[in-house]
Length: 202
Image 1 (cartoon, rainbow, N blue to C red):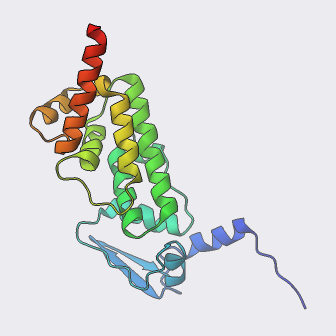
Image 2 (image 1 turned 90 degrees about the horizontal axis):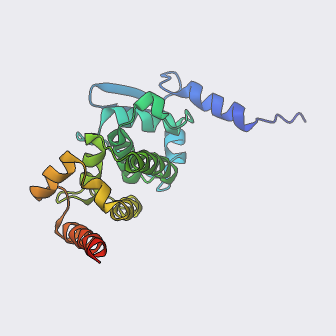
Image 3 (image 1 turned 30 degrees about the vertical axis):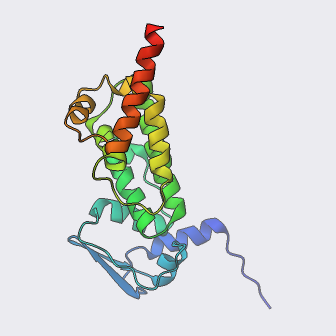
């Protein structure tokens, strides 16, 4: 009997070749104005929940959805060079990873968000997208997530660079309007800022 060995690289290449291939597709995914020919066995293998039905909502970001589908077909996580320096697309990808319970995708997206924010904390200069990302996670109308780890990481980072954030005009504007943080995070932020002021006085 002849045994055929398929390497991991060959397996990944085969999965990539199946992406948007109508010939063997057994499910069609429609979102926004796009349509992807997909395969249940590949979609299900990427989700920890092993759901039989994948329901896409109108509020799904089409670009993030396309990145998620490609990720499930082993096309790897999109590089920052491909996405630019905006943290918002990574957040949209994280939201999809959270919604469909794809832990590895969540972890990749969270790592990119934290890295990009960290670079801006070091530089002391923030893009508006980064400020809005923090707002979406810790603000008065936060994104609803089952996995709270990204919110916790973001909060820890914010309170680690309390005074640095205050140098950003967009941050100050949203903070003054009561739109940057929810009530508890706003109180915590002001308390952290107060401690810094007292340390300088002493």
